[in-house]
Length: 253
Ligand SMILES: Nc1nc2c(c(=O)[nH]1)N[C@H]1C(S)=C(S)[C@@H](COP(=O)(O)O)O[C@H]1N2
Ligand SMILES: [Mo]
Image (cartoon, rainbow, N blue to C red; front, side):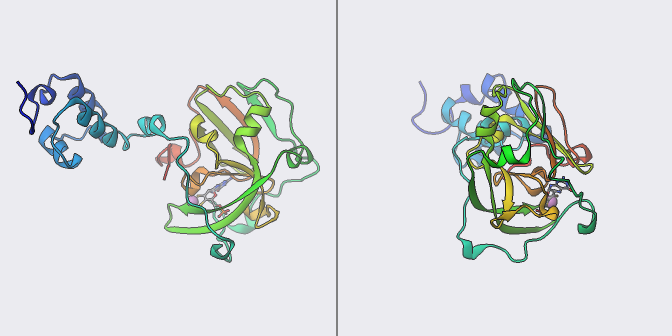
């Protein structure tokens, strides 16, 4: 018979499937005793359910599992106009004067991969899609954050419009500079993920990514591609400019 409180030994057994799964998922395969885990969870493992809860908590440290647990409806905070940071900082792997200048009249957004309608889009066509705006905080791993207002089309609306395979794993981006990147599909479909064409109510300036920046308030700054030239949908891991140098691929907040 199980004691009313305290630890159910069958759950704690190192041969229990829960514990083995937990051990496999430990961040960087850190050696940690089951005792240590129960301390972290704030309560003893009294049943399979609490093991499951602790397991979910541990898993957040793993990129792949992070993506799997990403909750579609968890919204990033939004702010009033009065909170907007002025001037908004510029950042890239080069200086502001070197930001790529994209010719609006020649521009076509290229589409490839798991997308039904791969017709390239002009800016006029993109601007004709339903637009909304959002005031959110951009957080850069270099140690600054700033609040800005971006406007554009909900990325989900765009992906649906072009017939993207929404069950695919990744959406990838090629930019007018050497930057490239990719995101998980749940983030691509998040209601606050916008393909933006304006900043502070004006056409997105060159420094902030003309002609468009994918704005994701649920991701760190380096995950938000500026100067997007091409978008593709794929199941093959595409990596990214910073990610391929060791930054976290999920890069979530
Ligand atoms: N194409 C491109 N996108 C990019 C970058 C870049 O160098 N090139 N830098 C990233 C980083 S690290 C940050 S913090 C933000 C900066 O955006 P901002 O200039 O609008 O502040 O853009 C991100 N997107
Ligand atoms: Mo950044």
